[in-house]
Amino acid sequence: MLPFSVSLREGVPVYEQVTYAVTRAIVSGQLRPGDLFPSVRTLSQELKINPNTAHRIVAALVEQGLLVVRPGIGTEVADASRPPTPVHREAIEQDADRLTVAARRAGLTLPDILAVVRRQWARLTNARG
Image 1 (cartoon, rainbow, N blue to C red):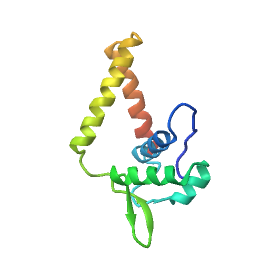
Image 2: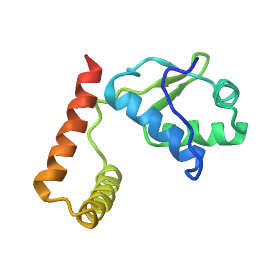
Image 3: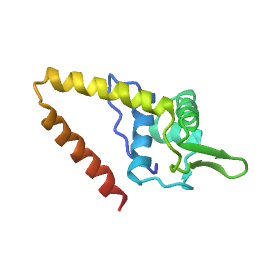
């Protein structure tokens, strides 16, 4: 059994869905620094995905600093106490732009979208406890 949950949906690349699910599990505290992460083989078998896709997922999470490979031990969740990099900040700006456009298109106000963000923040924060 995987230490995170993901319900694969059609129309969204598996790679994106799984990397997001793992990122969410780490941010919420479901996966903690030092926790062992499943091998590429295990990911591939459990999710019924191509081993190359599973490898790409793990490699991306390592590159993002969310996972670290420990020779002789395996892949672990990295220490998340590092400050955000300019790349992280740029990604957040892009996500905020998409969110803002989608909210405006849906007719939401700034207080509406801030309330949504606060609820999501609280959900992730409470999941750690």
